[in-house]
Length: 138
Image (cartoon, rainbow, N blue to C red):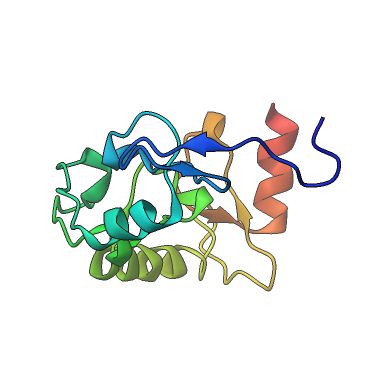
């Protein structure tokens, strides 16, 4: 048991030196075993060849802006994947347009628009009266 810090020494998988403190290597490095601090810093300095990943593309336009420039779509949009900033802004703009009027009776929606359920086959938002009417039909 290691109650008082007397941890057993391990060997670095890269330089094979004995060390008391080791770190877990990243998956991209393809190193089996623990790594000492010096080797960890050296491995961090080396550039990692990035594989083309389908997650790094915008699902709307197919553009590859990179992982940091992709946005997660809102839950109510029901999209699987990522959007680039221009596509995200376009989706948000069209969603805000849908929130202005009820899709059934075309009345102006108030503070709390209600999203139509999937089984109603309506795309957009409903006012309170139309929501209650649709809810009573099911």
